[in-house]
Image (cartoon, rainbow, N blue to C red; front, side, top):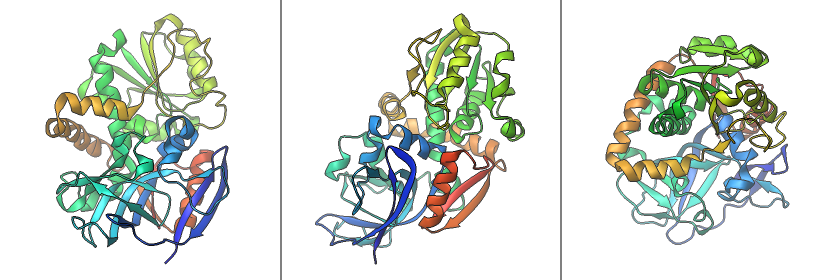
Length: 363
């Protein structure tokens, strides 16, 4: 049984290759996972776009390919097919950070009934949030009927949750509205949902392409929806921007339009490859300097403050509210094979995926 990987050229993200290699022997204390499913979302494009700056290319080193290629991380489910770790049994299923590939070898550590951490050496310099795996048999978040939704929305929702928590703790920087670019993205929808639940006095304005306006309006998560070509006509008010698009020209337009009324500019993602001269735009933007929101750091601070149990309850309460709000807004589209994964990745890179689709790959 070969290992198959979808590899992407780091400096030319549309250049991809489907590569096969020998799985090799299983090391001491190592567990081999067969990847069952993962979602492909705009979040994965962000991993690729900012990969070198934040170490995303380092989680899953490629095999048998020329220099310059890497593997884009995904979120999904996998099954243990071989184990040299006495505490992890063949047949177990897990959820966590996975490569766009057929298999992954991990070295479990800090093992508990509900999960473990991959202690493989090359993964240790990066945020530990990404190295945690849930064992589904004892995972309180696991719902067999909602596995697709968890892959599509779960990691993105948690980022939205943490942004709202951060903004609320800062009293929204004295703004009365939040402007969310790429409002059709899953992370923006998550933030809009949590803000609607926990910060109802803050007006939620979604920015999106003209073709996505109807979809974004139908989610019911935003107070108003504006197309990108209408930015210059937006009402001036004290605002914060949360930028999921990563489009430098768009961010510049927003800063120039709101100027002194802009209280905070938050950078989160990069879903728009076109027009992205620098992540976050120019240093000479009017108004506050854009600040990057790195979710893993905020997650660690949040759980340090509240503890794992209480923090988990706070996230879960908003998660269930989001699932109820998002129910029916996205159609689950399951596709088979890593060829399909590569195709979907390229579609997502070009921005041609219908936001009403939630795509799950079953390798």
